[in-house]
Length: 343
Image (tube, rainbow, N blue to C red; front, side, top):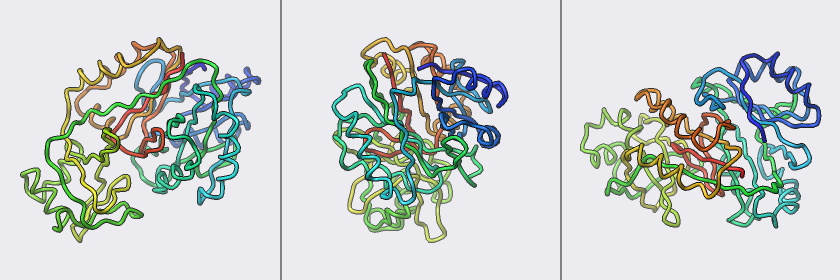
């Protein structure tokens, strides 16, 4: 797998044309993806972003991605609803399920709120089978995200990689529990909406536990998201907006009758050091997917340079994108970075 970085569709298409024996996954902003889609051959997957990660670190409005040997991967279009693709997903999984180095790259429609439905379509897969994914972005326009197989626009896509080299998935949270919990007493998981915490209006209880005015609550969403605990792991659920009825819409599902942790920022330098040192081998290739809310915080605090240098210390052959949500094994969450390492 080899990463690349280009500025224009013309040089990208020239590169693709000069390597007919390879296949490609490309990450770029909406306008660049639209331009590439008019002439992209069938061996190219296109995914729109809200920022890119490249061999030169974090970038915006560039074209990046990676090439791979066409023989090691199988592409499955995920239709709407995802259940329509169940048989093909299962068929592709069966071919790689006994390979501990195999993984699936999942690229999801970033505005359809269907990530949980897509993940549950993989119910047949072993829980330890590696799935890494990101939800396509549209540079915070929240109008339409784009995924293509060649010139064909698709809802979502899964690419099954039958790798020979060792692979590793890593998840990084830069938030830790604050010691405060909320009980979700009324929620609509399909609409990703929480109506009440502790049998009181959601915004009232959320603001109360943070010790702030209710009107200030949206200003604290980035620093104090909620965490869902599963098997001693924290999976972040980021608030999106407050509704007029004082309910709160999130970027992923929160189930009723569950406790959620109120989170607070961790020491990023220490977290990043732990992330880099958790690599069990020296990678020759790294794919990173960063949540848009992480990226916004990095931009606000001028941290992307530090993040880039830490990640690139693993190896320079890197690519990735800024997403509207992340998938890790059989979970969907937000405000997280997920990494794929290939030896």
